[in-house]
Length: 251
Image: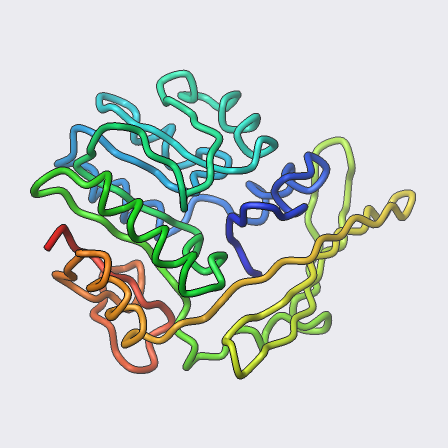
């Protein structure tokens, strides 16, 4: 299913919806890769930190700041084990300025895709550049539009059942529409509690960009890419790779 951190999105701002995030998005390869990448970093900035799964793990022995615009997600982050070791900041990644630089700046969960205009993307990349220490590295992911993953976000293909403590079985599904002119996908996320039938939903937008377009935006922000990954297992990027993952530094 889609996973991202928009600035104003009920999927993350509404506590009734935010509570499903960790169940739908458990620890995975992207978080594991970034955790290993942080081994050489004394300080980490986690933009779009969400419920803090990664930030709380990285904060054992290093300085970590987790930034997210969604208060409901940060409430979960503060309560999780290890959350007390992280400095949590409720702010928009396009505009946040913390007055210090970090050895590693990252965005996981395809958070970059929620910025759906060229200007928004440029602002986020500027935030990365403003917070990178000399010799520091950045990494983030965006889905490869060539794969056309949005075709999987239909009610038929995305239907799933999850168990939520205290709620029992929950039926969940997605529906999506892709705009070929802009690369923007508008998708709905639905949760229906089986016992009682309560239905909760939210609408979201994400943008798919090409590697070439991303490379130009990174260059414009003063960032250079040392390696393009195609997945979170460390594979190099190929035209049909599922992910576009730049790993780089200040130019």
